[in-house]
Amino acid sequence: MSPVPPAVRWLPILVLSLVLAALPAAAGWKLDDVIGSDTISLSLEHRYRYEGLSDPFQAANNGKAFTDLISMRTLLHARVTLPEGFSVGAELEDSRTFLDNDVLLNSTHVNTAELLQAYVRYDGDVEGGRIRARAGRITMDVGSRRLVARNRFRNTINGFTGIDLDWQGAGDRNGLNLRAFFTLPVQREPNPQVAANLRRRLGDNDVVFDREDFDNLFWGVFAARDFDRFLGLEGVRGELYLFGLHESDSGSRPTRNRNLYTPGFRLVRKPAKEVLDFQLEAIVQVGQSRRNTTTTSETDHTAFFVHSALGYSFDAPGAPRVAFQLDYASGDSSPTDGNTERFDTLFGARRFEFGPTGIYGAFARSNLVTPGLRVQVSPVERVDAFAAVRTFWLASKNDAWAGGGVVDPLGESGDHVGTQIEWRVRWFAVPDTVLIEAGYAHLFAGEYIDTNSASSTSNRQGDSDYFYTQAKFNF
Image (tube, rainbow, N blue to C red; front, side, top):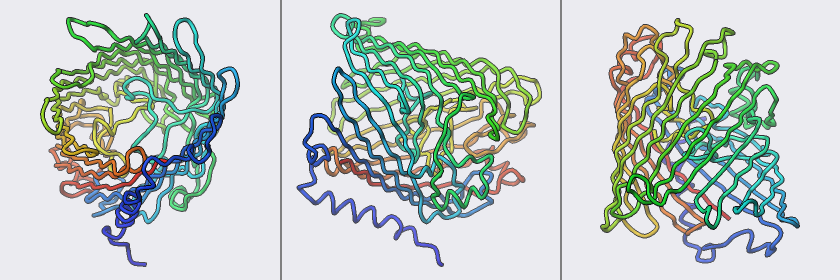
């Protein structure tokens, strides 16, 4: 069967989106309106995406000239309110792919017919504030989302099973937030280490239920406070946290046996018109871990990460904002010294900082130094856009480029990976119901990519281009 041309693959998105956007009756329509109950809440989200990548840079892609993919993600969330502040909820996730062309499928693309959430929840007044307590299988966003996130761009979503306590102050404690959680991270199946015919099973969207076990524990404590004034500035929020991850081999699932403690802090001033906004986050990571899942020897782990950003929003048509960003994530300086210094982003998201993930995902929060410039604008009502440029160096020439799966342990390939430009446009065609989105990224190959292109570690050629378009519907 001949491959489906790219134009034909994304055409259904455009047609379906325009049809729904043209229906006045669709505006504001929700499943809750149909149910008409104060006790039962029901929501449905469906996303359809086409993405294509020319000259894939991943070392395992065998020099393919072009790969593309159609993915769909459907989320159905139901919640029933009970007496005395209690409620029960469940969310079903169906993430699958179609018509994939030479894509290296994994569990970030496919998770078919899965119970993403199933929880008991309590909301009530406690100690001058409001508490939300959840127990069961849940999803979480914590702080900046760099270490713990409910994935938005990625086709599958991180899940956790355990307890999450989130207290928000009120009255004279307004702006104070305390949070603690103890969970078992959900392991998405099929397991890539043991599943037979993994590529076929993912391509066929086989249903294999996820699981969790007590050999993988993740916990955290988090505190945040809004300051009336901080160093003479208004509207500043401070955050302080500590996360712990304790992981070991479970049955036939080899792991990196991570035993990590990750403390950090963040100061942030949100964007506002004619205000200089900023963000500073610093994270330290200590403990023990293995270098990969194939070795059984453990090493001391000492790593760190710093994010800084400075922005300004102009009081002008289109509400333009310009921001300068700088990120540093440590890398391993030597593969033989018995120490691991590569930063581990745990369960964080990266699309909002380093470009699209999906079949692209060129850069992760590991072994990098990257300054960048971003411009955001909202040219007309219900449309927003941004353009960004970032250049990327390896923090350690001897450690891996995480996004490409390429490593030169001798450090002879240089450290400049490349420069990325990207843009994204979003159209809220029907507010709160239909969102149309398109994006593009171009990766200019740097010395590191060019050097490894001529070696056995990578078969890519030239720069890479990535494009996606998607439609999301909320009911």
